[in-house]
Amino acid sequence: DAMEKAIKNKVAKAVVPAIDVMFQAL
Image 1 (cartoon, rainbow, N blue to C red):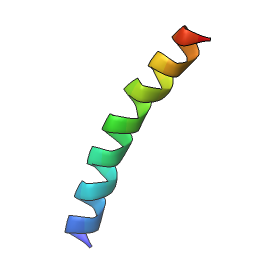
Image 2 (tube, rainbow, N blue to C red; image 1 turned 90 degrees about the vertical axis):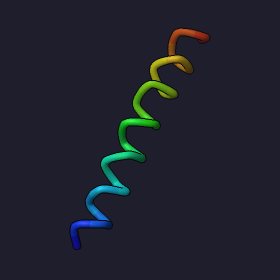
Image 3 (tube, rainbow, N blue to C red; image 1 turned 135 degrees about the vertical axis):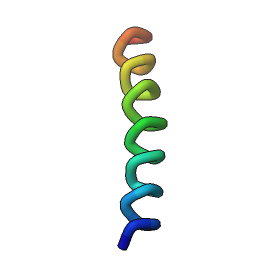
Image 4 (cartoon, rainbow, N blue to C red; image 1 turned 180 degrees about the horizontal axis):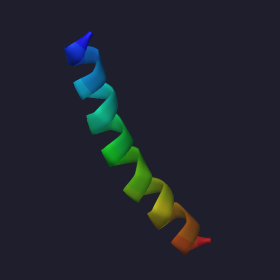
């Protein structure tokens, strides 16, 4: 499903920077 793929893409782009910030905070 194209919409599901787009949602997963947005989630991945949102999660990656958040994890990056978390690791920098450690």
